Length: 295
Image (cartoon, rainbow, N blue to C red; front, top):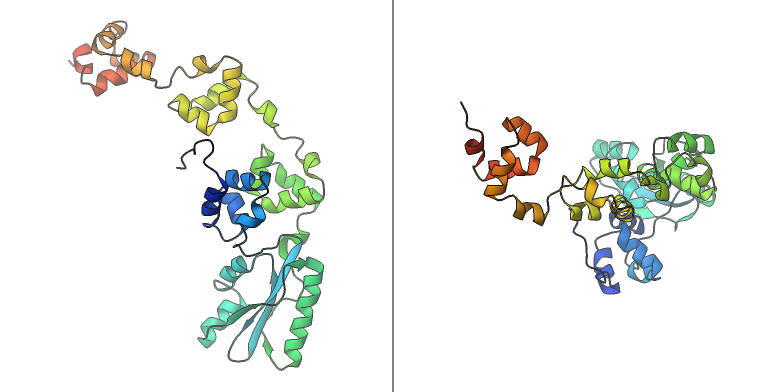
């Protein structure tokens, strides 16, 4: 579990230390969104992330080649060469050729991350050059295949968006559809059904349901700040957090108070249901058998 840092902790230097854990900006954005946003807001992103390798996206790809010592090659294009490499060594023509020939290829990045249409042209040019030079080209699919670039049309993005309640959930759960919607300015339209941040915690019932996930107000505030803030603002907090532990409750339920409370109930079960904290304290301290002797 991540611990909350004190205000002022994320200085430029500490952000640099955190950023060194990640290989790409995308990894940092998903791994520690707070630091990523801090870098953007303070215009430190380029400097702090200068050690990271560049990656593409749905609209930028690089061309790469695998070269084998038996004069075989495979040419492809990708938005992230490291991710694509991990896929190649698990399945497909590269994996098959490695296992068949018992040799390891050399991976070479042939271009920077460029416009996807330019990358498709370059990929075909490289394939033709290797063929003319007598190389055995392992590609089974026609050049120019870019996977999900053409998948996320508006209709499919809209269908995908219906799985989520908020834009944040949409972005985390389906980044391809989210990015395509953002790029094509469909996002507000297809997310119209979603809960807006300001509307999410407007009812006491929703805040109360959320509060039941937490044992203390501190956990509630840290892990669901929106519901906590709304409850505080609307003066619901003490009411909906009545089930939570507190210093006052720990100090209040001494032996005498627990015994006095237990006299209100006819059984352990009723005591537990109607005065949970007093019952738990009694059980923990070995008083329960005294208050409700077993027959």
